[in-house]
Figure 1: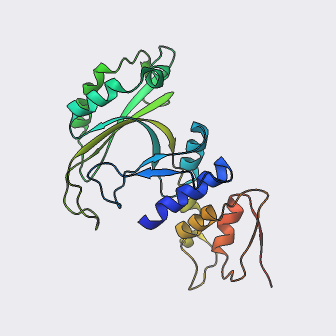
Figure 2: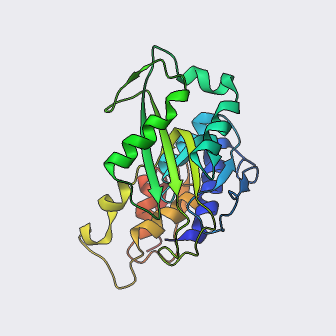
Length: 238
């Protein structure tokens, strides 16, 4: 959904949280054997990890941003990639004082509970020293798997199965969609803009406290509602 808006939204939020020029500094690369509409993108973001977490939390179209520890066409290839990932990047998140959780997610296929447990047990080679905490872990690690499926939701097929493993840096908070969806409003017009699209426009407009947003064709105010949610001052001409 709204696939062409994914990269522009991330670059706008990088500019918002990373400062002038940060949006243009975002570097994109597609995983091998993946097409442009793939749900997985490799990205190098400017600034520190805090910026990445802020981008993920505010984004409408990003489900999560992960520090990639490794990827492969098979779990054996994935293990080789994780083993050579620098220890100085891994060990701070594997300490005895920290808790963790491993989550299995997939695209194009369903993974049963039994399969998820079997997959998680494959990662015994990672030297986790902390305790498992399924409710509120300090660190969440994701196994992201995409199968060599056929056409999915109108998207062309991926040529080869890929398995990613990474640490969650930031996750989306999409509560604004049900909160502001059109059917929950007391008044809407025939041309009222879809809530998700309005919030995407507010993101690309860098709406935040201290900004003034003026909509000369305000209609029923969907864009201004989104901008005001993010703290911007809004104005209409009557």
